[in-house]
Image 1 (cartoon, rainbow, N blue to C red):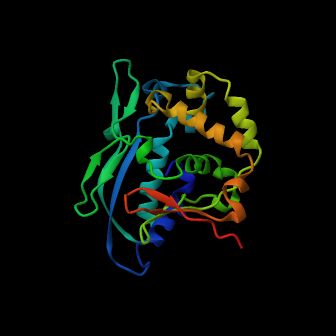
Image 2: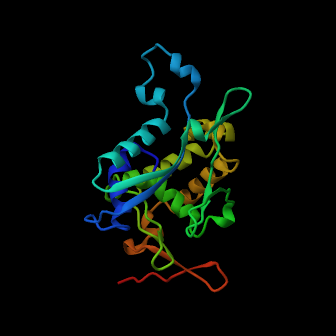
Image 3: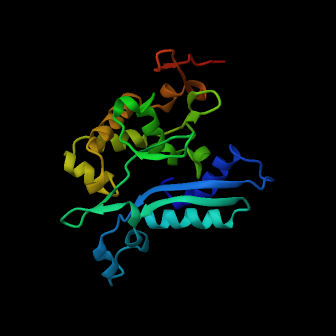
Length: 244
């Protein structure tokens, strides 16, 4: 979750896959991520020129909304892990803040959480399309306020549901391609100092794809999902789309 606006519907989506709403089962909650992404100097700012949202950063309003929503729901929750905000923040000598956790693995049989980093080869299939779908979904009203469901645990498949985007994405891509890497980092990231080394490269790869495929129907013909099955060797193979 990356915005307070999707927390209510997003949690409902997640819980609909897990529990019967009439159940009294207590659900374990692990909240990891979100760091102190606002400068300490902002706490002493007395001007009103900056919005309250910017002064609060991005992580605090999101974390507060998640906890508030858990509290107000009818299900029973037990927060087992709360590694967020100050607990998930380290600072360099210049005071720049970075998240301690950029990624992690969960042992589903034990519940253990281990820090991890993932290169491009480990991000599973259709990485660029999935990235574009996340960044362009605001133009598709069918995804408003929803989480992007991708992996189906029941069938062990990646199901990349269709997402529409407009030619505005092409205009944005063309306009940003000529900027330098430092300029792209500053313009496209909410936390430039904390991004992964391949952040700008991934942005450029998205724009290249959108320039080559400006019409979303090339990616999702007949609004069919892109489905990937696991192979015997552990890789992924795309199913042929069923076009009516």
